[in-house]
Length: 388
Ligand code: FES
Image 1 (tube, rainbow, N blue to C red):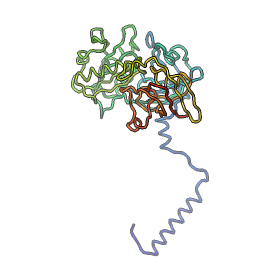
Image 2: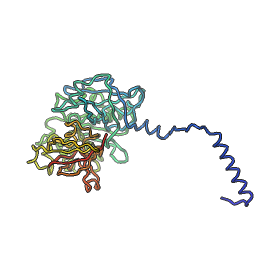
Image 3: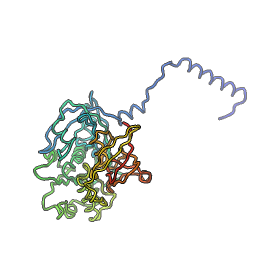
Image 4: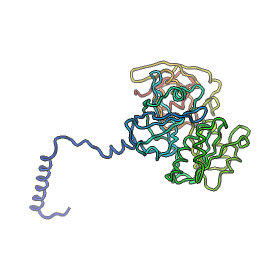
């Protein structure tokens, strides 16, 4: 600051003081609480979305597509094609959270009114999937949050040419990508290699309608599979030209097998992105799991504040599933060990964490924090979970 002289500086300071006092006297006594940055953040990343089911339709012999809109109307938050929505269902008085890939496109969410669609396949012992297929009604209200996950095309990270290896209901994120490409709002070339039994193809009519221009859909034939029933390396090579990113989506065991197949084809790890649909069907098949303990049931003590519940926990089911069976709410998001939403402190006991799903930070490993959706008890255990 330039010094102008003692008297001039004192005069300047007193003018500023006078102006400030004047502004304070004329100010409103009611605080202006509007926070423009917070308002934008809440619109784009709301912590809780209140949704209403506006349409339910068949998506094939074993699946249904559910359309959700914002209760009260309006646009839905932006997301990337390939991301998922986490929904909370109240079943028999218990809250169960489930992630579903969004199969509608981002541009459809930003319409007025916007919507998202999920496709849910019925499965054996599928508590929530059966509920969605049999009991969910148009007009039902749900809470959720979106868009989650890293399974989307990012031009700085991925090759513009994408091969999507989809198994079963794992085709849903590719539907979203294909629509976005066809809309001209996603600049990529997509080949969907879809592995499903011919009688049970999800949303086949829509897939066929999307297949032109930069989107290609290839249904895997029996001769495209190897001796283990997986998509063969030869088949994958047919669709690999130049720099290609591979997006894998399906059951954990299949995704792991495909990942190995791609590595054997010389695809670098940075060109492989994977998303698993649901938890492993048989954890005893996972690397390092002590298969002889698979049929054991242990006592799980769950500490929530001053509450202590002792519940049974099967060695073959994750801690999250044990809590859900006992009606204890443990919030989840991805349910595949990746996001850390179900981070839980282990106070005592032995456990197994599936290495493919071990998304813990090094510090969490050191201090016995686990992601409960990817952790299986191998002895009686005590865990401490947040109160929600
Ligand atoms: S819910 Fe994401 S890590 Fe468990």
